[in-house]
Length: 110
Picture 1 (tube, helix red, strand yellow):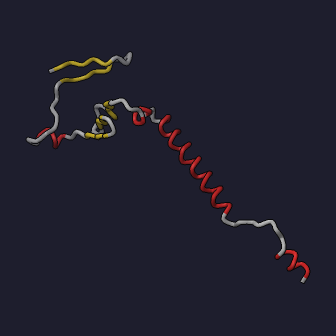
Picture 2: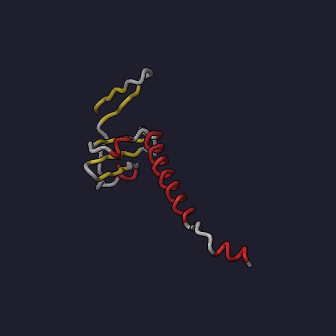
Picture 3: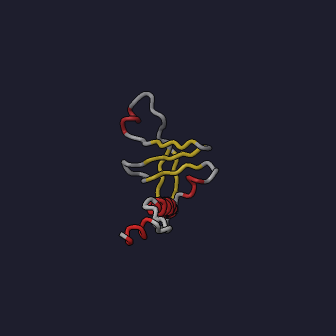
């Protein structure tokens, strides 16, 4: 009986929810670290800058995408063969680009 009174009079409160706040802090640090790692891994710090840019992913392949950032708006354009044959296509072929063995790219207009 004396032991029960001692436990009831114990002034050290152990909050079981305190662990959750620590887990939340750890999760937030992990999320920020993951975002920084992804940005540095894919070399895309331009997405967070205020400058406008245009980027071509997978050039010359079927999965080619053109990503354009103007101000806060980011647009993604995926050209396909269906768009070339339709009357309301958004673009047209204006030339050909060749990449040399030394990495230099030469553009030949049509």
